[in-house]
Length: 100
Image 1 (cartoon, rainbow, N blue to C red):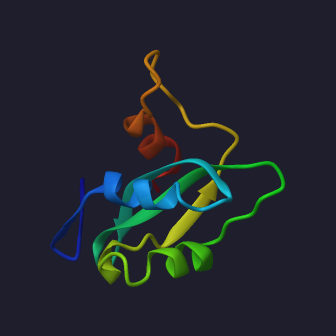
Image 2: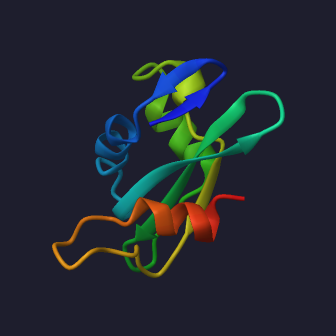
């Protein structure tokens, strides 16, 4: 969880919706520092071959499905997400690598 503008945001809710996008192979959402809101969301995604994904597509997909304050403000495309031996995404490592 991260807090944006005093509101709790649960990344799992957003990740579930992001996996509905054809371009997304896997994705994680982390909170990153923001001067105005404290934290805002950032999508870290692995895309399917030949696919592209920008913040505009994310905004369109999530608009009307989640509150506006929950919509991530940036997208980072990576080759793979760091995972534990059991396959769970290592969020602390994502925040270290892409959280600033």
